Image (cartoon, rainbow, N blue to C red; front, side, top):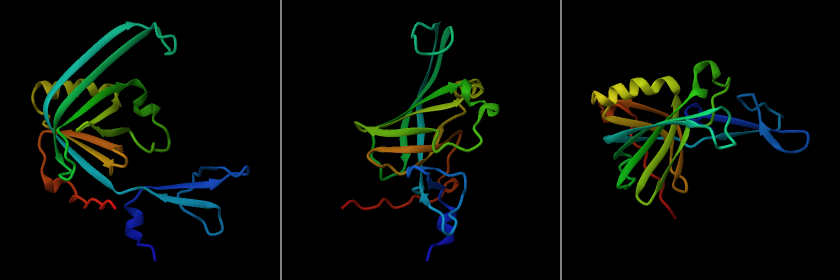
Amino acid sequence: MEDPLARESCMVLTQRRSRDGNLEPSHAGIDRPGSKQRTILSEPSEFYVIQIADWDWAFSFSTNRTGFLAGAYLDARHLNITGDLLRPKSLKVQSAKLTLLPDPGLQPEKWPARPPAEIAQLSVQGGILEASIHLPWDALSPLLVAMCAGHLKFAMLDAGRLHRRQASILGFRMARSYAETDLPPEQPQPRRR
C-alpha cells in the first residue's frame, strides 16, 4: 500500500504514451485508472549549506561578435561565491563555489506556466562542489549591496541527492544567519553496495 504522505512530499511528474508510442509529458497531475500514464516520483531533496568565506563580482560589456547570440551587445555580470560546505556532513569536499548569473529572461512576466524541473545543477569534482545558478536580473543589485555590507553569510541550496556526482537544484536562498533547526533533519545516505 502506498504511503499518501510520501507521495505528497515528492514532486509528481506524469507521462503518457502518444499515438506513435513515445512517452511525452502529460498535463494531468495524477494517474487515472485505465490510462496509459506513468507516475515518476522524484528523489527526496537534500539541503546543501555553504558558509560564505569570500566573494567577487565580474562585469563585462562588449559588442556581440559571437555570431550565434541575438542582440548587438553582450553584457555579463557574475557574482562568484566561495565557502565551506557545512551540510550535508556526509559529503566531504574541500570547498564550495557558486556562480550567480543574472538572467533577463527570468522576470516574473516571462515565467512559464508550469514550473521547470530544476533551476540549475550542482556537481562535485576534484573535491569541490560547484554550481552556476541563474537568477532574476533585478536580484543582482540587492545581492551586491548586501554582500558589500557583509550581511549575507550563508547560501542554502535545496537540491536532490547526488547521483553520479551531480544533483538538480530546485531552489536557493542566501541569509545572514543559519540554524540547523531552520531546515529538516539530514536524511541518512543510502549505503553503496
